[in-house]
Image (cartoon, rainbow, N blue to C red; front, side, top):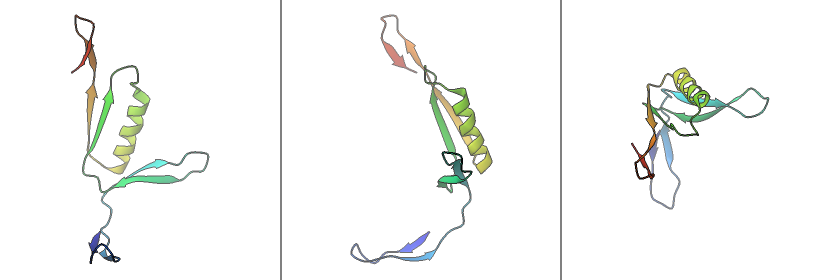
Amino acid sequence: MHVQYFDDETFAIIHEIFPRNSVLKRKTPGKKIDFQVICANVDTAFIVQSLDRDFNLRRLERYLVMIYEAGIPSSFAEQKRFAFAGGTAGKV
């Protein structure tokens, strides 16, 4: 979007709205089949998911499908915790 601002006290003038290169969307909750736009014009999507008890393969699959359908290149990073000999946990 190309916007011209005059000062903090006035309105702005929109000169141009750029076309969307990509749209990441999800299904609306409930039975109605409609979509909500999450974001647009994303260059790369990064998915970071912990490998602890909260790890959910189905959630990861949903995210990957949404990103794939939007045509956005993606990367996946995993995070895990490990235990030291002393019994305290640390991050890798």
